[in-house]
Amino acid sequence: MRYFDNNATTKMESDLAERFAKLCVEEYANPNSMHSFGLREARYLEEARRKIARSLSSDPREIYFTSCATESINWILRSSVLFKGRKKRIVTTSIEHKAVLNTLKDLKASSDIDYTTVGPERNGIVKVAKLLDEVDEETFLVSLMAVNNVTGAIQPYEEIGEELRKRNVLFHLDAVQTIGKIPIDFVSCFCDYASFSAHKFHGPKGVGVTYIRQGAPIRPLITGGGQERGMRSGTQNVPGTAIAATALQRAVECTQESSSRLREYQHRIKETVEELDGVVNTPENSISNTVNASFAGIRSEVLVNALSEEGVFVGTSSACSSRGDGGQYVLDSMGLDSSLASGSIRISMSRFTTEEDVAFLIEKLKKTVPLLKF
Image 1 (cartoon, one colour):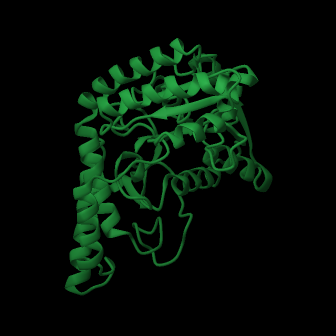
Image 2: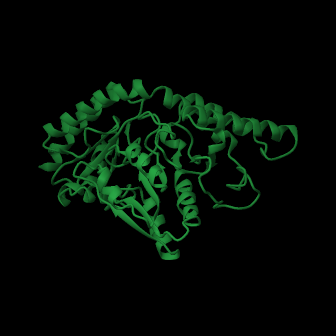
Image 3: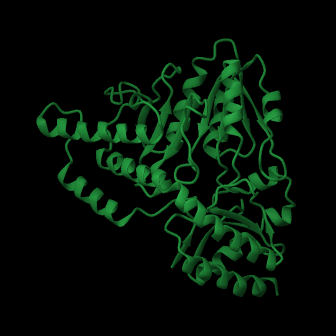
């Protein structure tokens, strides 16, 4: 089996999976209990918080644990509305994850706000000036993904964040696809909020992390027992957070080495796509692990299923696939021809992807694509 759908999720490292299972069995006390067992779990939790903060050049008091990035995004967006004052506008892009776009749709229907989406250029990257032109006196928040999950395009988030700080506009950064792929710290991004998930960098599912800059306004989304300093109630997942912190630390430490190696693989895959008369939708300014490609005349779900039969697992951007990411809207926003948008696949690697894996993928692409075009 050769797995190339790492932007959707990644496998846990074997030693971390073993440690996770051990923690679940041996370190199962509630970290909010007053006995020594509970206090020990609280120390595990706070060490995980400190480790994540160190890796991202932030303060442990700025790190909060949730169940996933989707929860973190909902928390940030819904909370920001409570501090908008007389302002009524949020600015985002048309290529954000559905966790952002659908939450904004719901907020528009239920709250006294509106939002504007800015489209990208043909390369999938939003122009700084184009986005900032939409930020007016009515704007209280901008939400932007640092890296697009469908194409891998890196957005100009640092430049945008710096300007927003000058304008006193709150800035949320969707950092889900950044950890272990590009160097990032939230201070240099000038963001007030950031969100990401452990399962994207070889940690466990069910662990999300929210960064909230000290002084940035925030209100709880989930109330109850007052965990996470009263900001996110619910018993914390101590084994998950402990393993997530180690996975994040490893991913950050390996960023430079893995990015350089994956860039070579990315070039080889792009060359193969072009040899097969395909179109590469991933720009040069992208994370190194991702290649989004289209083959005219071949629907993405057909190609994905054909490759699956060959033991190769890739993602799809097609909205026609009920089990897919539904990312075709991203390619549509880029102005890609509908025949190409509906025939796109997303190949995404991890730092554990090998040269042999890539050679196998290329072999199967060269075998499968011509057959489906026939």
